[in-house]
Structure formats: C-alpha cells, structure tokens
Length: 333
Ligand code: ASP
Image (tube, rainbow, N blue to C red; front, top):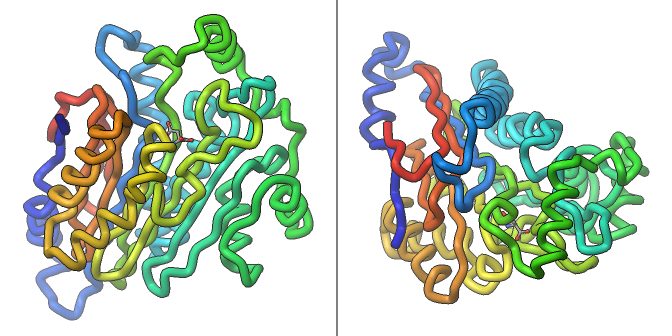
C-alpha cells in the first residue's frame, strides 16, 4: 500500500499565485518551488524522541532555505537542488556526506547524481570515498566532462583534479552509523532504524525549468563496491522540462530494477498521469518485488507530491509563500 500524505500541490500552487500580488501582472515571473526528502523508512513516532524530531525538522528547514535562496534570487532549478542537498550532506543526521553509513568493510562509499530538465544533461559519481560533497562531484562531471558518470578511484581523482574539497574517509564517520554497522553485522539483517537514508531535491525555477539531485551513503553494511540507485539517472534521479523531476530514496536494488524515476516521468509524459498517480503505480511495482522507499516529485507546472510505501519519509517543500516539513506517514498539510 502506498501512503500518500501529499498536500494538494496543485491547489497550493494556484493558491500561491493568487496570494502573491506580484502575480496579478501576467508579465511577472512565474512562481518557483523546491521540495526535498531526507530518506524514507520505518520512521514512526515511537522511534523518535522530541529532540530527534526537532533535529530533523531543523535539518530539513536548513536545506529548504538554502535551495530557496537560489530560486528567490532568480537562480536556476539546477543550482537550487544542488544548494539544497549540500547542507544535508554536511549534516551528520542524514545518510549523505558526513554521517554516511558504513560499508561492511567499515569505510564509506558515496553515490550522487544530478540532472537538468532543460537539456537532460546529467552527472553522477559512484563509490567516491574522499570527496566532501559528492553532489559537487556529480555536478563537475556534468559541467566539466563529456561523460555522465564516474566511479571509484577515477571519480575521486576527477573530483580532486577539479578542485573539490577532499577529506579523509574517516571524516564521514559518526558513532551512530558505526553502531548501526555493528548491529547489522551482528544480526546479519538491517533493522528498521538502519534502513532509511539518502537525501534529494527537486525544483522548478522562475523560468519553468526543473531539476533533480540525489546523494547518499547507500545502505548500512553494503559490500564494498556495491552501487545503489542513487547515482543512476533514471533510477533515483530524473528531470525533464514540462514533464517532471524525481528524486528517490529506498532499497536501491529494487529502484534500479524498476527504473523508478524514468518510469514515473514516462508515465506522466506518455500516459498523461499526474506525478502522484505515476509514482503510486511505479512504487506499487517496487513493493511487488519486495522493495520499499519513496520519491519526491515536481511536475512541469510546479505541482509537488511525495509518495512513499514506507512508514515515514523526511520531507518538505518551500516556495515564495511558505514552507512545510514532515516526518511521519500520517502528516498532511
Ligand atoms: N537508495 C539508497 C541505496 O540503495 C539507500 C536509501 O535511499 O535509503 O543506496
């Protein structure tokens, strides 16, 4: 079953326009909007303290503000999604950048991808180990190489050669993730708390361009060399102007097999479904195979939706009229 604690995005979008006096003039720039996720999983009220809740809410809000700042100043959706995920990569509560989960070997291997809906240009890195902000490495691949994806030592070397900040692999360590690794190795199974991770963003800018970004440490105790869906264009990340932008989080193996992000956008484009309908059908397929997770979505008109088949998903949106964040499955606007 899919929980769809979505806000009435379409309504909100229109309401937003009505509430904005500047939009009464048809020559005014259209609205902008950004939506994020900070991972999906078994996130229940019983499993979180009020302090943890507050920490996640603040982390989401910081990310929203960073992306909004770009859009407010007329920046691109592409720059906005990048700006939104960087604070989450730097915030150790999220499974991306600092605070990334450990591999079974006790190290960190990070994956990231970014896509521009204007021309469907994209960049990605898989298995980077020393790049402080993997999303910047993905962006550098997109902007400064003729390729779409670099992996492993070559990806690290590419990032270093392009002047990105390099850190020792231990920079990503946190006690919380080490305990999770020990738990998983002991029981040989991922508990609820160890499952969720990954951060991502989608946005539409004042020119109507969309973009998506996804960045992660992957799954706790993953075998060295394992690559999930997060760096794969079409699996976790996709953006096409006039259609939709998607960023996914969940059990990557299933998201790869379904090609989640591209499937959703194709359903919107070819079958005329709404982003919510397309995501629900696609995540049903993921669930049929045994996978769980969620997506954050924006369509070509700026409607936002969140669809997930897990108990909760850290998530939020922001536009010129306000912002909203949520954690649990039953939270609607
Ligand atoms: N999708 C990520 C992966 O499989 C993990 C997650 O989103 O929780 O690597």
